[in-house]
Structure formats: structure tokens, C-alpha cells
Image (cartoon, rainbow, N blue to C red; front, side, top):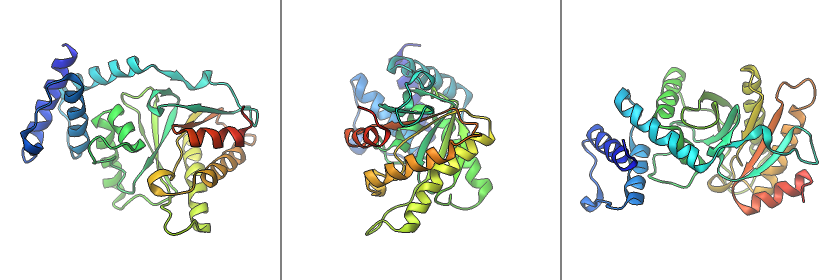
Length: 263
């Protein structure tokens, strides 16, 4: 099945799944990029529910091909920083990283971002992994019976990501100013992810910049907490072999280079 046919097939299936959905103005995107963006938007909007095997076959073929086209980055091959032989810094799209687990900065519902094509990391990870990720998260949350607490972590499969697993953690949302509780909860996010990874025998973990951006934790202070917590966890006899600090924005790259002694 050609790429355009895959996209059209998936769009048609999602529209049948959501019969109450009305596209604004009945707009139809005729170019390939617009059709692909529409597909991502529909995937973002679809609530968790059982997934048809035929849909998954087409979705997985599309997402796996896109994964290879973006290029997979091996976490193990990234050079260590001057500050620590088990820590690496990499700037780029976290959905390209092949690690035992990547970390998702989630919200307390833990179902991914429902805002179509939103620029948050939660949206990016769910969009690249496929709809199975939202369904697994839904099952975890249904079993838990309450929103995910700040500072904890959950583990799911990675599905169509290069990473084997995703660690989901809810960071603190800063209100007027950063409080000591905010600092403690952010440190707990990093610690909980590493503890859960170690429990499952995972050895390479890639962190995003938890709670910065829309959660308004100052970038520098968040990075200082992240580096300090990870370094403390990696003291022997830690089973985690490598931690990657993944950054996307230049401002975060500069901060982490400074903290980790990279030129």
C-alpha cells in the first residue's frame, strides 16, 4: 500500500470511529502534507478504545516507515559528558532516540495530548508511538482509579518508537513562584523514573526537560535539579548504564552544556 493510500485509509477509519466529529467548514486537505497533518489531528482526538487489527497493521506500517525516514539515534553511541561517564547530552527529537526507555512529560490524566497537532512532547510521543500507547495508558489509569500523582512514574511499551518503553511522569506546575514542594516533586519525577527503569532491568534512559515550557518551571533551575538527582542516583551500585538528557530548544542545550561541562 502506497503512503497516500495508507494515510487515506487511516483517516477514513478514524472518521468512522468518531461519527460525531465535524471537520471545520468541511475542509479537505488535498496535498500530502495536509492529509498527514489531518491524520495526526484525528489520532490526537480519538479517545481510548479497542483498536481494529486492520487499522493497526496500516498505522504501524506508516509509523515504522516514518521512524526510519527520520533516522534512529542510538543512545548507546552518544558520547559521555565531561561531568559523568554515564551521562550524555543530545539535542533533537526524542522520538528518534533508541534507548531502553524515553521519558514523557505527561499530564495527570496520562492519556496523551488531545489538542490536535499540539507542539508538546506528550503529543509528539503519542503521535509517533501510535494509538496503542493511549489505550495502554487508559488501562493503567482505569486500574488505578484516580489521576496520576505528581512526581510518580508509569511504564508502558514504546510501540512504534525506537525506544522499547516509555516512562510517563507528571511534573509540578509552577504557579506564582517555585516552591520547595515544586523542587521536591520535580526531583521525585527523575528519581521515580530511574527507580522504575531499574526495577524492570532497563539500562538506558533518555529524559526530556520535565515541567519546563507550559508547566512554567524555570529552565535553569529545572536542569540543575535534573542533573543533581540523576548524578546522585547513578552512584554505585546503580544498574542504569546511561542517562541521556534530551533537549530540543537552544536555551536548554546551553544550560545543560554549562552544567555538564561540554563546550
